[in-house]
Image (cartoon, rainbow, N blue to C red; front, side, top):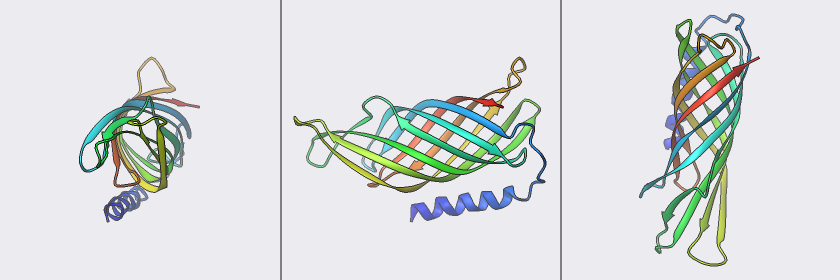
Length: 186
């Protein structure tokens, strides 16, 4: 049921976005890199790991765009204990697509929200035994993010950003991340 609530919120925000006037965006194509700290939660505990996102945005107007991207946890992932007390490392990757809505604050900064669906692959590796055993779980799950970006005065095609993002994962896991990033316009 939690997926239905997030998807309903995303569709509501998307409907509001279509009320904005559609004009030609200054730059329709943007590539971005975000990196930051990610908390993976399994309803019993929450553990941290580093995450990186590579993406591309195409803007239909200054306010509305389409996002494509890839998110991956770096290092060994987050360390948990399963029900029998074994140590389990959890990491995930996600290929995602969704809508991006931006609201300018002034000429150099704006707020944004984005959301959509991601093909997520969750990997649980039991590291208590040799050889280590790995289980993979995959599915299509919603994500949603909010953030702010600013354009430095000295770099016309560069934007710096901060974002808080939530992603549902398989097996009752979820991920919440705080990232900083850079966006490059063509």
